[in-house]
Length: 596
Picture 1 (cartoon, helix red, strand yellow):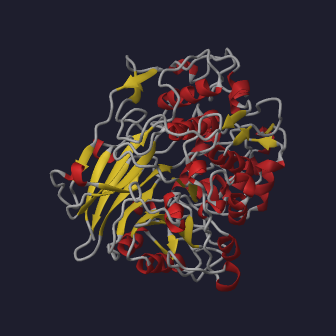
Picture 2 (cartoon, rainbow, N blue to C red; picture 1 turned 90 degrees about the vertical axis):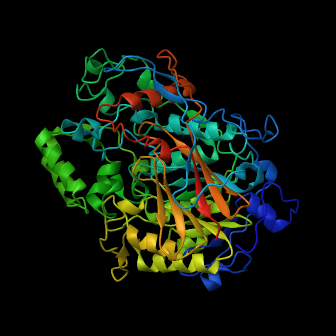
């Protein structure tokens, strides 16, 4: 790069530096061309727009759980407390059955020199360039939604999770954790923003979208739909297939050791409050945000009506469940035809629930409008990366300035043609290439939902049939063309994995994939960028859990108690993947790069 200046230590604080420090400059609305960082343009006349919203440093300060801006408790300095460098939730003792969690051993930091050698003395030389937090795969779930596929549990134990009714409480606790952080753990520099890398919702339901935006920006949330007074779903159905927490029934999960918790369901749908993030935040779209149930193409009128209606299927023979599950997994039913036929075939087995129009699926335009709604602005920026230009063009990708020396680029890897695997259209791929080229004097960090290996779906976009779809290998090749690319940060797989990408005579970058906040371990990741002043850069990654205590108390059904229980139930979920934490090289790391 032609210039390097620490955001943490720079004395200059002009308008642009203020915007950079608060992560509030949008470079491009993602509709075909990239703006220069200092360009002026008008979306209505040029098709591009700069959302230059100055968020004051006071509003960007960490907030207490009461929502009042507060200064950090101590001067910013390196720390480990509150991160997985201090402790990680782990089973206390025993094996098999239901296991209680407690404080487990910390995950140490691993230095990775796959792309460049780590030089001695760099800790004394380094300068902070940027620091931010990644949330991914929150999967805020309306568990009473009529379209949910809980009955697939008849063929696969992990197809339904006993902890799903507590996703909102868990997400609020993650917000509380970020608000309590004293800057970045390695450098002590201020955190600039939070980025969510998709699957913020689960069923593509308007109820879930409202909950997500309130979790992030602050507000009161009733994680309930249908009957405002009572839970109506599989967990009070009397079916042994599901954990019935309030009932004495010895269901399948209680036989595995799950507790009988009287009052659990009433607590799970009780109103709670999110303080909202004390940092600016940005949003990236995932397949569960764009497609009904994360896999079906938008537009089926039967499924849309079923979503808001008064009937719900709660059980299904194992053979029928296996057939539907295979069709989804093998990409044989992108339009939802098999699901529609199944619901019609089993009409007599549907159970009554309270209809609710707020469960309707939301379109990509609805998603953009909700982000642009002033009610959800929180600490900003307005639109959380998205702009009116995105809305006008029907796009969900954009670029923004992270700091003086770094831009962020959020891309849309969902395939509108259906299925949960991803891809990208030629138009967007060219925009990505041009944006990186136009900002060659800045480092770049790219954000998406899908990973390079999960972008295998090249089904045609029904709205743009001539726009060829591209897989992960084409995105990797495009990023490798640009020596300013430092990292590709993503989610989707629910697993921690960090991959080094190196191309001969081209750029090298790190792909950083972070575990979800719905499957154990519930994690988010802090990423710090530093200049080592020796011809190398380092990306430090530090995983964090929610603020809820590791130990649970079955008698504590408060908001905090439910958040702790959310984690423990997830650890004990039958059929869970025990490999999602990844190896030590995928967790807390220092990732070294040659300076371009």
